[in-house]
Length: 315
Image (cartoon, rainbow, N blue to C red; front, side, top):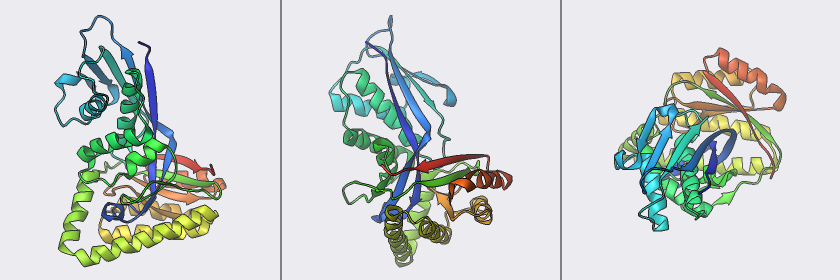
């Protein structure tokens, strides 16, 4: 059987994180200059049903049957086998590579799941629809993030800017003009499951206050959708600033994120905010293209361990 390769991009949430878990909309875009890749090869000389997993970046060298039942990679593979009704695969190896920083809000877990699901299904001769790939990846995301909204697996699978609400059909986000973002990594791991659980505890203790916060964020998302469709960078930047203020009020930002946001703003960014679960991970800054390098250097000077310049273009 020929080898089969699949890739999936990273992602950033532009506005709406956390509120999206509670039914509000959110906006997210792929980050295509970082990717996860899965390569499936047939293994000659191995007994049937042996699936050998190799992921050097996390020091994984194991077979499928030795992984714990709740291991995300095992769940991704099991999802494919169950969907295809296959109980005994040809012997094969799955090598996983990724340039997406882990635990940083860039969708690493979703991208790895999507790449593995696509590569294995393709290797077995039964490519899956994007909708099915996303649904299988969402089941794996529950292990990583507890009660995810589904936005990560959606934007990563479809590789398109999305307007996302877990209660509505997927909407591909129309882009009015190119936008440029600088992503700044705090270097502090962001445990999304932890921050999502923390917000849930606070929501249960102060339900009305958090309902108001989520509703306010949802209103920003709707305005940001219009700004993106109309190509209004300055408006989008102000909305990002407001969203960050709400996330700070929610308690999911940290001083390092705030420092990077402030550094970007002082260097001329149109807007800046944390992106993802918070508690660490990444922030994003909306910039004019000629500012991107300068803002990236400013973020590095302010303590970012890595920066990425990303663009979204009209389709």
